Amino acid sequence: MGKLSALTNFVKTRWFAKIKTKEKLTAYQLKMLKRQLAFLKEKSPYFKAMNPQKLSDIPIMDKAVMMENFNALNTVGIDRDKALALAIESERTRDFTPKYGKISVGLSSGTSGHRGLFVISDRERNEWAGTILAKLLPQGHILGHRVAFFLRADNNLYETMNSAALSFSFFDLLKPMEEHFKTLKEFQPTILVAPASVLKEIAKKQEESEFIQPEKIISVAEVLNEADERYIKKAFRKDIIHQVYQCTEGFLGYTCECGKMHLNEDVIYVEKEYVSENRFVPVITDFRRKTQPIIRYRLNDILVESEEKCKCGSPFLAIDKIEGREDDVFLLNGPDGEVKVFADFISRCMVYVEDIENYRVVQLSADEIVIYIDQITDRTKEDTIGEFKRLSGKMNFFLPKISFAPYETTPGKKVKRVERLYKRDQEGLEKV
Image 1 (cartoon, rainbow, N blue to C red):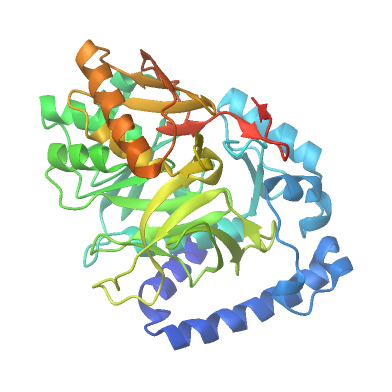
Image 2: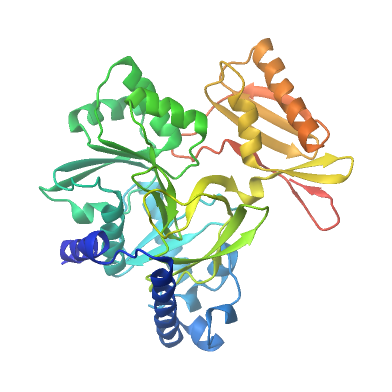
């Protein structure tokens, strides 16, 4: 039954539900929003008490608000603490098969500072799998694919579609990469899906000897920066490294065959909070999530809106890049007060320096950052500081104290290239 549901949604999304104009997209979204609000007012105690007449009647929420109101928000009577205990136990045992009744439960990675809970019904999971596959499987070739997934946790989402026509293999990121290389060579995936930092490790192995020949490579979970993208392209001889913008809150976007990221506006409605002329923080409403509604949910990501229409012709919003999290924008002192420096500018300082393969830049305070690189030499330190000096001159901030440390990663943890570890309260005092 699960495979049939996934297959039905796959066929519908791939061939019969394509929206080709902005006008039709707007009409479709209004219809779906009306339907979703009617459902929630009947099934969710939280929204029933609120009784919203239109979307704007609902206050914007974030992960903290969702977790605080979890029991009232969900539509099937799930207890937050019991579900959380089940999710934590699954993480510890690496067994992701147990369910809360008929509901799949999982933890979000917690990069926003709040531990998140993810619950989804079998029906939603199957529809989700069908939608993702409809958008990601190569055009003109959908049968016989072998998909390798490198993920922190396996929630059995994609195994739903396992069959002779389409097979999946899960690679646990907590296990050593050398162990995975052997299995990967035997599996010979036609589609490779992994976080950007893991794709880079596989690319290094590929440069030594071409041990796999994937038809399509998809980056997930982490921001794919330009330097890593170029390296992976070169190692696998690809023109495009595809990306999936997906998180606890849903399947939000994907790269089209022209290489441009589009938001899935047939699944989500997006409100934009602009932080600069073309950068915005998305507030999303999901049309399909029933068990755990995602309504006016403010993400913590900064997206860069494309100024050019994509050649693929899709009316869905095109994104030049996912720049990072809003709370990782550097806050530096300048002669005219606080200066906000977006992650992309920090990353470019590192990309311009030769002999740096891996890096992390972490802001500790308003006047101190630490840079983690894999090869610390007098030249790399001098060149890196030189790039930051040039940036400080362009953006008019005081050059912070810069220290260097060896680059290291933790297996199973997302790599954040640019990260701010302190915040300021309303009085301007620093809080680590």
